[in-house]
Length: 306
Image (cartoon, rainbow, N blue to C red; front, side, top):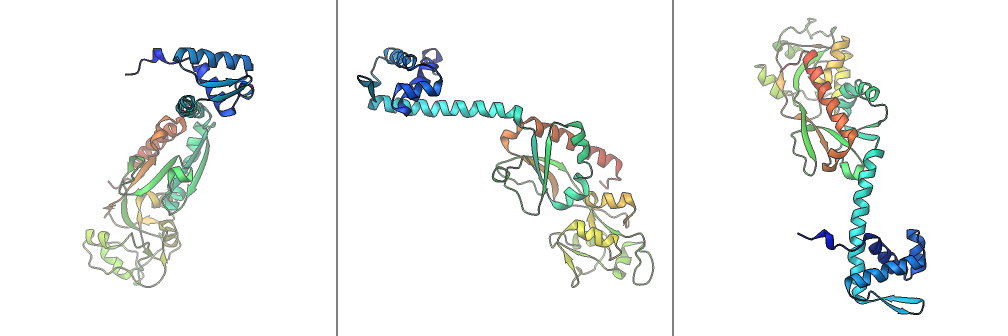
């Protein structure tokens, strides 16, 4: 282990680095806010401490030696790392902006209606909510927190499981089958218009869970957004296979009703991700504490299928 007691005076190292970069003591003095004489004195003291010459002096002109140039490169790298680390620590107190990226359906149906609670509790934090179907690159896109629906395999980020979810059919309270009856049992779906969704969300796993041998719906409109599919169901367009988290708002408002008691646990789950350095950002810690608590409240109060 390096004995830090043998470390040269940091002020002298900084003066030497500035003198090398500027090729003289005067401009170096302007940068570090001392006199040229003070820079010359610090460099002399450094040379005496190291026991070698760092500059060749020709009157008022100086030229760095080859050894001095190599030493200066090492100092510059080390001072740069110190400056970067210090700036990172300062930024922790300044960072009051929290950028959250989420899928459109989760943003609009679950997160956005509740986000005011976090904002009210943390008025010093400016929250930016971005929604999109593409997977954000947190570092490249400047995102602090990503909320994703998937299998949890997200390299290069800290990943925490937020919650599972469940599929079940929903429809408008006024919806009737082709025979003019309200669907009362899973077999009645054979007489219903099954709304088509993103191809990732097939009806087949739920139909098999319900003991039904019905084909996947074909033809008609395919809506590649689960929240829009839910909206179509609320408007009486048919029966949608929705996730509980996505449908809960419309169910609470009476716009759609859950059909039957058969629920299928989704293969994918919701995850919260952030960059490793995010553990040091207070706004991220505050949001994580809030959303995990809010999700527990939701599961406890919304007729959670699991």
